[in-house]
Length: 543
Image (cartoon, rainbow, N blue to C red):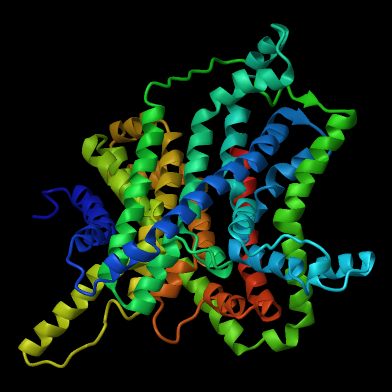
């Protein structure tokens, strides 16, 4: 019977419903009456300050990230200078470094007892803080700088791809009409890359909105920290759901405004020479300026934090290297592997549904299954908690009514909910990767296979899957890296006595013990770095 109603249509919608059920439950929960009065208390006291801090953080980070990413993307895509081939992939490396790790490294360097101020005091003869002024890094400005250093690669990746795809002849034509290189860039190249710019800034805004560890470490109160504190300290799931829904509403407005602003934008680029074939050869002060800016950005965003981690890890290796570290490393690796495998399976199901039955229904499954990535980790955690807690309560009531003993928190108190939270958050990455890979496979290949007598399943297995192997590998590795780094979801949903490398390192970060956090943090980076380089090389080959 099920086969008659097309299992391949039923399965994608079943998967999609499982992924969006927590989000719907979050919205419904936000409309419940708050008996504790904690939400009204937050409105009367600190909620507006939290909202203002969140707005300042988002605006500051997207502005500074743009200042970092836009020039280097242009340099790498359109100019020729020594070391360009290394910088084009090395500038993506900060993605493997969790922002809160960068935060603790710079705090350690810039504090009163840190080496920077110690050097200045020794050099200038200063004795105490009243003798000189030194900016405090534990401020909202410091948090903006740290997050910008960690998040600019999202924008860099998209802009570099956009610049590489542009026709170099357009830029050359603008120059022959008398425009300076800067004016040609502002009037030709930048408008053509507006879509990539908007998507990249949206990603950075969402990551900033969802960051918990960095702002919490710098004592900057935002809506994300409000969700975390409301749930763990006040124990009010309804209030946490209300704040989460406000953040969800802000994200929907932000994305809608961005789409509305581009509703009439139609950009078509003709064939011709690309920037790859018409790169400017930089010489003299231009070459040294580009090298200084690019390598300086890479140094402060990745090389310096990694060097500090190596230094502390080697210094405290004997104290940090223990059985617990091995246990938490294995926890992180197999958890990330399970999540990446399931996310890849979900992506294949919804994407092949669209491949076999293109239409509104198939497109809807892809859009809905990708909603979770727009939500911060804390919001996803609250969203997942609501239905699974209700399911546990219902299950235990039913068992008692039928004379059986309770099974406890079978769903909300085990790893089941942690995997579910990760899938809601990261499935969109795999769905997008498979979608773009399948888009490069001509549908005529499927038609040819079907006319030769192959069934739909045989066509997928023998034609489509071999052609998207690279996309499948990219999807798996990207989700794996994100799952290895994820902190807010793990902090809120992990069962008792279960730690990951991220939560283990964050415990030491919270206690300001960087020397003990260095080795687990380094493992997070190194385990994510190897597959990250593999993905980067694959993307370079495919381009």
